[in-house]
Length: 441
Image (cartoon, rainbow, N blue to C red; front, top):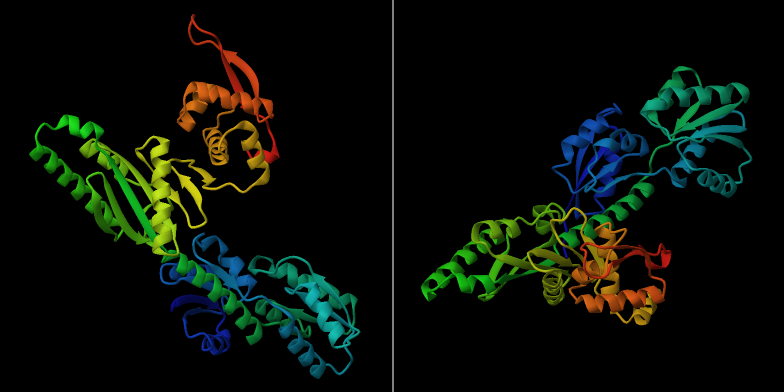
């Protein structure tokens, strides 16, 4: 699939020529440059670019750290790391400049393993010190002072710094130094990573999303006496669902009077639902038409996969009691109900050996066990009764008692008390999940 990627590039003026040569090797990427020799401009440029680009690329760690607070969580961001290839160039330049042999180098901004590899591969005997903290605009004075102290205590020392501002300050003080800059090799490596990451993200955004909407007509048929009134009602429902589909740029089709299908893409669905947080159709339909909907959303690489997952998601929504929406993703994980602050998550199929063992011993389906545990956790039910379990799993009280007794036998739950709500009847046992890493609760 041909994916075009807009890359916001932030860094100093000098780097444009180098980066342009590297971008020429990646025709699917278009750089949008925002360059300045003022490090503080990195944050301003970031705010300017975030609505225009698919990802951000910083010339190094310093501008990235300067702008970090302005980078939104959803926007991939990268910086060009300083690695060994640039260090070889710097050591070559220092050897050309030095009338005396290199005896000691004070480094900042590059990891010690790269220094060691370069020193050994070039068979160099210099000693070195390393500024161990991150180098950024806020600690320039500290970095310069560190290098000054090293040079003062070690005659014939030179400095290799990762920040141009530090290099300029050291030159003003008459301290020999070299500015360690990103190389084409380092840049190409990070562009390959950027391309892979952003392409995968774009491909996920274009995934097919199938939605199945089930309309509960049980109350509707009773309320409308004539066939004409009923047909008008069906038409009103269709109009409401059509407006919903238009919000998602979706194609809507009618399967029958009770079920509808819509197709869109994942990027649009995630944006409109604000990351699966809201699905206004549910409340709107209830309020304006007084109908209950169950919605199943399926993600998938193929139409077949997305359609199948939508069907499974609809089953989950109906099993939950309706008037809600569930998602089944391409990895077969269930997410829902949409619109809840803390939705539950569980797999459609369980492969965890311990959970399967617990399920077999308790006589309950493994998926139902995982679902029950997830719902207990989501509802923060530190204590619960057989009635709570029956409601969560959609089973009878008698079945819930049987399951809880089996869970007691294999130490999934424990009895923590009793409650008596009326003067008649037996007190109800109150249970709690046994804290165990095996149950992941």
